[in-house]
Length: 306
Ligand code: NAD
Image 1: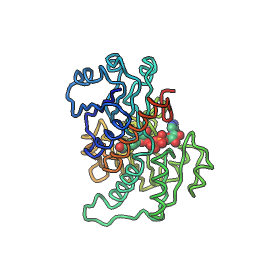
Image 2: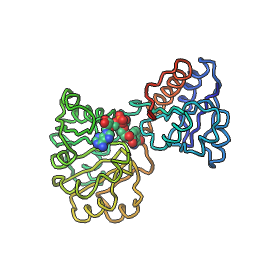
Image 3: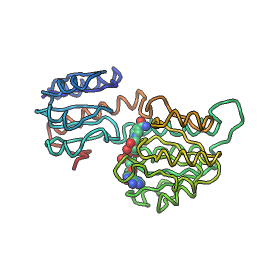
Image 4: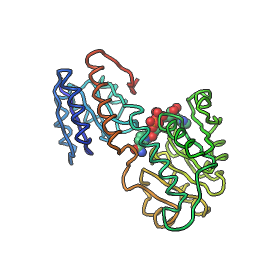
């Protein structure tokens, strides 16, 4: 069996070493395609792979067509919108993610960005504190839960809304569960976004939702850029000088935001929520373990193309 690591943005060496250990202990071979610049290189590398570990790499129908021996793709990370799930199912390929492995890293970044924003991006002027402020967590999954834990350490009042997570699960963490996104945005001056990018959530963070946020509003996005209606957000920020937006996923309209909303807007230069040594290692090794579990024992835990 051949396991391919196909990463445009490579794992840290220590993560690759950990993956190799898992793969070789199972009696499989490890192949590496890193920093590829052309899709043709990926198409060539996948030809004889039985399993592929990816990060943000695109696995579409063309790649799946080329991967004749492929049984499983594991996205080392949480979001798997870079994999064409329908095409994978049609090719009888199992797709998994590695939930929870980078959640603390993303949560720490979200809180770090909150501090950065309320301290006026460290521009030398007096800012505000997080303690006592209302934080709304939009989606109480792996990252959302970690954000709640850290935010409580800051002394924030924590609220959450999740379309699928039962309210009891949220409330047992000492977090107030609300019934809708509308309620959450009305109640909280700070919102931290943790919804996945799905057909339902794309462009759903729009003018109508955001306009109800209290004065001094701060929206923190470590989820996906696609969930934001950028035109609606820009319109609102033009109308409301008190509104700040900080994001780990650079908007398509970054240049416009940076120019128009200087002092109220910040984007990381590239997505870096999961860019920690710990998350890198955890997600890579979890991916390797899941592949071994699937190929040896047929374990389909974490399969996302059900
Ligand atoms: P998760 O799957 O553990 O949690 C997602 C939560 O969203 C679930 O609880 C689900 O019930 C909820 N949800 C789904 N649709 C919803 C809707 N329409 N309204 C409200 N809630 C909804 O995922 P996670 O690990 O917490 O990650 C969340 C997202 O963050 C990922 O999908 C990914 O896009 C993004 N992410 C970004 C980075 C980064 O580097 N910035 C890293 C990891 C994850």
